Length: 291
View 1: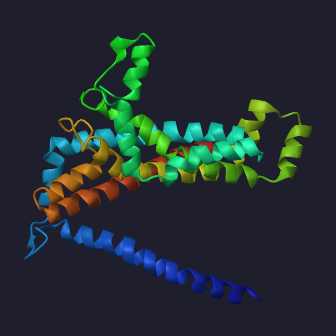
View 2 (view 1 turned 135 degrees about the horizontal axis):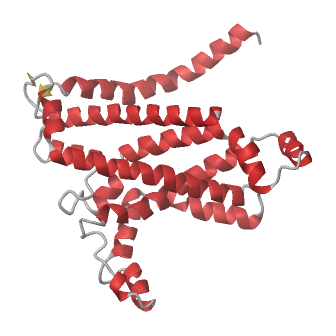
View 3 (view 1 turned 60 degrees about the vertical axis):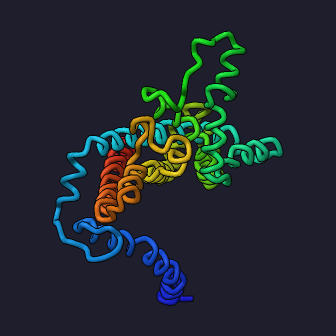
């Protein structure tokens, strides 16, 4: 097959998927952006109000609380999920029976519903029957027992372990695949040059998979900024908006008061914030890779 025929085949193969993606992703985003300039309750006529929805968002302290909590989620994801997954991938990238079993065990949370994960961790954190307070009591640390999801000061941080636990498996598989795609000749050359252990990891392995790390960071940021179901199941954004995220803020603002125009403005803001965060992360990681 010549080059033109190959390109034509690739285009024809990708077109159906791209059309479906555009229909269910790009069109709703554009539609939501359009309605963000209107006062609309979901039915009836929509009244154009310009940037008034965005002005209200900026003046709402709950929005800034939700943005702060989302930044915490992004940091927990990037500096929690990725390092843990990378360490596990280094340990488990070989393929023997035990390592395959551990990989499967780590990946199990990815196939569970977020609702199930939220309910599991609700029971773990339960102040009376939860296993966490029970273990602290048995370990002789009763003064460490807390109302993990009811204390506004610690609730957002109590959500970090289930967030990390539920997505480590995804990045583990991504990093293992990246390790397995490194040509064996490079490992042999590094060994001949005397690169072993940490030196080989930081001088050879990580630079070889750095593009994969950048993609994982993008997935972490975009996933964290649209986190909803886990938090909604466990706390519903409470107590007193202590665990409010941008997605729960959008949901509560839209469906509690039927302000679909205002909710569309929030969703558009989430997209813009995601693009800013992703652009900043790619700029920082690109500078790091050039050093």
